[in-house]
Image (cartoon, rainbow, N blue to C red):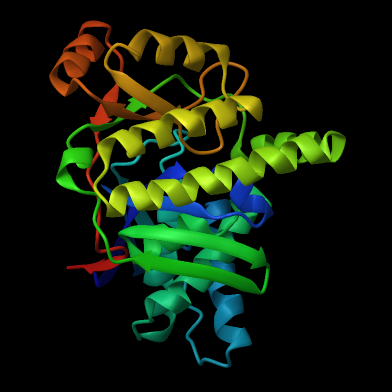
Length: 312
């Protein structure tokens, strides 16, 4: 059986949540947790509706570009290190890896990351309604991405040629604040309603988030840990002002304050948990000991620099 496999990394938002949907910048890092999508020809075509939707998006793209392809029946397998519903980009990684695999499966040709990313964005629309495009771009290209969408037809995807410095990286953790009850789409819609109700107030918050995002880029480039720490703290306050942080997540952050500072990353959650927290620890060993003692799930942050790749 001949198979085609591609994998793509997850992501974590360092700064810019929600504001990015309204034309503000987003700073995102790919993380070294991957999802692999494998496809092979099979007369018993898959019946999974989501995968059928993905394959249709791929075929729609090929038709729109006038690319000849063979519409074959297939089956598939997904292997993932990424937990679902934790704002670590599992849907983006699936969109990217499956797009790459199915593009090659239907045509027998490898496609550029730019083309894979265009298809993945169309798939992300199905999952999230009005996604920014930042998640799939980070999963596709890897590294640090400074992303801004002015219009649907005008997006600025800048791959920053800088790594998160070791003295910042050493203190970064991804901590689970509890399962999110709401979908990303529901949280985006919630902030949209707030914007309609309080336009001046919410636009002001978006403006402050933009300033924080830009400051974070400077903090990373200048390797300034104190400045980076302040950016994390400021970003969390602004997300709380958007009402996307649950009481449970706030309590956890207060409990962890003796070890450093943290912020909700991703769309957040209000009812119960808020998904993952990006935490910058002043005392990494003490933090790890405490989290293990309290049985709180966490992952040590590690960047990915490859993006989507073909697996042998």
